[in-house]
Structure formats: structure tokens, C-alpha cells
Length: 158
Image (cartoon, rainbow, N blue to C red):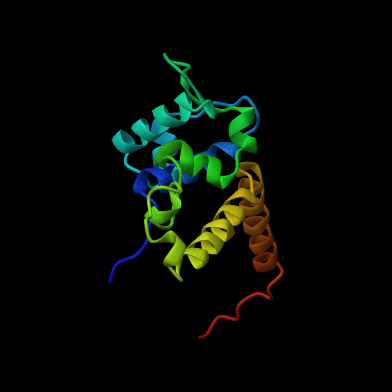
């Protein structure tokens, strides 16, 4: 079975951006901490962070007090911005890359469906920012902890 998948780099980029957005503004974190918190290999994550730094979403600091810090454009970035910073523009089908890439466009009954699907995917990826995802995760996690704490004590058998 084949799937349409994002690259591992894009997946790790989203994870690391959300992780950094959970930190207070201006706080740095280390590569080992990010790798542990995102379940990503350090060597691969290092390359992803370099790409995010070049895109202006993250700042890297060298030395003993070094590490990585999410910048305001990174906190405000949409999911699409993060993915495209790593993978480049997203297209569901080659016929959507430019008007000249599909000679069947005028006669293809699937083309309009691809256009609508592409638009829907892009709209969803543009709807939420990294900061919103980080906040949403914290709120969801906090709500789950609150629900657990409100449960009646378990009765012990025996």
C-alpha cells in the first residue's frame, strides 16, 4: 500500500517547532533536549534545524550557552510555512505545479478535483500557527490531567 506522505524532515520540523513554541519567548533549548522531546535522531534534527534557521524561523546560538530559539516569525508561522520551509512547495499532483506541466489539463476530468483538493489541503495547513498548535497541545494535555485528577479514587481489590 502506498501513501502520500510528508517527508521525515517536514514531520520533524513541525514537531520541533511546536516543542520550541511551548517554551517562554527568548528561551533557548539544546539539540539533545529537542531530539529527546520530539523523538527525532539528533543528526537528522540538526539538519532540519539548519534549514529552519535559514528560513528565519529559528535562531541558533553557538557555545556553552548556545542552543536553539524559536523566533517570532516561527511562532506565527503556519503549518504550511514550516512544511514548505523544509520540503518546498506542496503539490498533490504534478499537473498542479504549473499550467504547462500537464498537457491533458483541458481534457482531464480529474484536474478540477485535484485543484479543489489542493486548495482544501492548503487552506487547512494555513489555518493554524505553530503557537496555536503548541498552546492547543498544552491546553489539551492540561485538560486531560484535570479530568484525571477529578476521577474518584480507584478501589483496591483484596
